[in-house]
Amino acid sequence: MVKTTCPIMHRIYHTSPGRSKFSVQRTGRMAEAPEDVHTDECLSTYTHIYSQDLLKDQVAFITGGGSGIGFRIAEVLMRHGCDAVIASRNLEKLTEAAKKLTSATGRHCLALQMDVRQPDTISTAVDEMLKEFGRVDILINNAAGNFLCPAAALSFNAFKTVLEIDTMGTFNTSKVVYEKWFKDHGGSIVNISATLGYKGQALQVHAGSAKAANDAMTRHLAVEWGPSGVRVNTVAPGPISGTEGYRRLGGSHAESAGIFRTIPLQRAGNKTEMAHTVLFLASRAASYVTGATVVADGGAWLTSTNDMERLLDLWSREKRKDK
Image 1 (cartoon, helix red, strand yellow):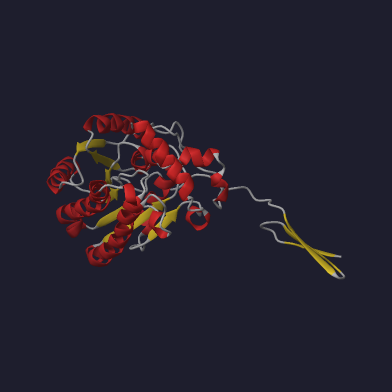
Image 2 (cartoon, rainbow, N blue to C red; image 1 turned 90 degrees about the vertical axis):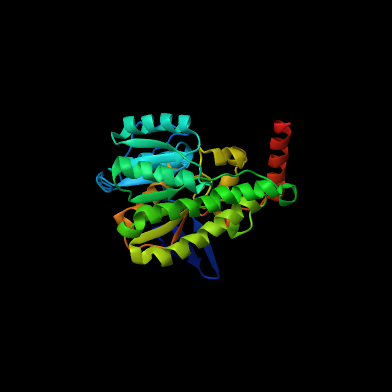
C-alpha cells in the first residue's frame, strides 16, 4: 500500500490492489478573528496589522459613524494616525461616540449632524469639517437602513426611503465631498455595500436593490473621477456580529440554529474585520485599486441557503412585537 499526503488539508490517499480510499483530516486552524466587542464601545486592546502611521495626519469623513460598523471603522482609522469626522442625524449619539473615540485613540474626532438625504445639510457639514481640519482624504459612505420584509408587504414609501438613504445618500455625500475637495486634491472613497443582490436574497428587495445600485455607482465614479486622483471602492460585508443589522436580519437566530456552519469560514464576521478591509482600501496600501468590490463575508454568499420560510417566520415574529 502507498500513502501520500497533502500538506494543507492532510489529505490521505490509501491505494492498494483493486481499491482506493480517500479521507480528509483537517489539520489547519480556522482564521482567527481580531479583537472586537459587540457593543458600541472602543476596543480595550488592539493589535496593529499595518504601521500605526499608515494614515498619519489624514482626515476621514464617515457617515453613520456613531454606531456599529461605522463606529469601529472610525476607531481603526484613528488608531492608524488620522483624525475623523462622524456624521449622522443623531447629534447626541454622535457626540458621545466622538468622546469615546478621542479617548481611546488620542486623535481628534468631530461629531457633525447631517442627513444624507439632504444635500444642503451635507454641504454644511463638509464646510465645517474643512474649516476645522483644512482637508479631507477619506470618505466612508456607511449610512444605511434595513429590515426584513416581503416585497408584497413592503410599502412604496419604505422602498423609497431605503433607496434614499443607501443610494441617494451615497451619491449625495460623494458628490459634495468631490466638488468641495476631492476634485482638486484627490482622495479615497469606500462605500459599504452588501451581498444581498447577488442571489436575490429573500425579504431584501429594498436593500438588495439599493446596494446593487451602489455597486454600479462605485464603478461609474471610479471611471469618471480617477483622472482627479480619486479612488472609489466598495466593501460588501456578510453577517457581522454586534450590529443593528445583525439583530434586525436574524443573525442571532441563525447563529443559534447552526446556520453559520454552512459558511466556509464557519462563523459570522466582526466589526474590526470590516474596519480592516476598509483601512486597506482607504490607504496607500491599495494605491492602484479602484472600481473594485471586496466581498468580506467568509464566503457566506457562495454557500448560504436562501431560506425564505425561516426569514418569513422571523419577519412575522417582529411584526407581532411591533403591535
